[in-house]
Amino acid sequence: MDLTPFTKTCHQLQRPLLVISGSKGCLSCGYLSLESFERNGDAGAIVRGVDTYDDMLVATIQAVSSKAEALGIRVGMTGAQALEILR
Image (cartoon, rainbow, N blue to C red; front, side, top):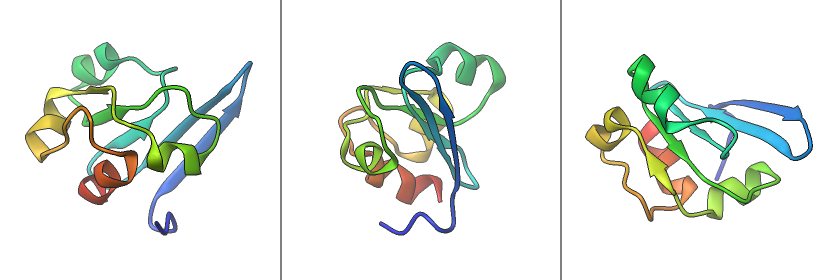
């Protein structure tokens, strides 16, 4: 998947804090919480156990905000599938 249209953010902590943002919302690693997405009314999907952007694309979505769910993102989808919707 070409990530050029997305904004990618990485903070090197004990494990990398990774976020890939599209125009409708973002795919993030487990450092971010579902509660934050809900509180702010944002579309967010969370994957866990990832260390790279490539890992995020093949990882299974573990949690989805209600706004992301309204867009069609579901737990069990891959990160790549979620990003196609968040593009």
